[in-house]
Image (cartoon, rainbow, N blue to C red):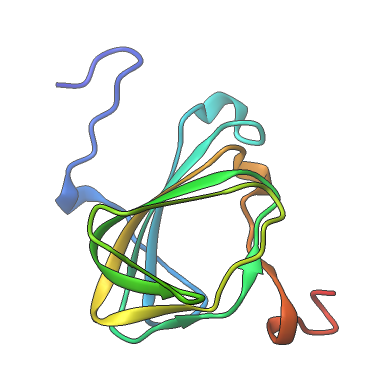
Length: 128
């Protein structure tokens, strides 16, 4: 039931977007749609088996929860139920998704600062 100030989104109704790679799908949700720039943002992401995300950082604090599957981040392996929490500007990666794929829930402190900022060899002259 959805009422004033309440929103229900059922699994079959999630609008999935395509990530930078064909092996990444995502759905974004703002917690305060009236203040998009400062609102926290929740992202539900699905990664195909063996997908690789190059080292990067974000301009705000974030928390990631592994719902299904696994991913290796640097030298640490994260599986179902594990959490990662990083402060703004903290670099990490590469992320190497396990053979079963991976589904994660990510919470960014500020939607406007959530963009991926490439690091290391992933940087290009355009992103530097």
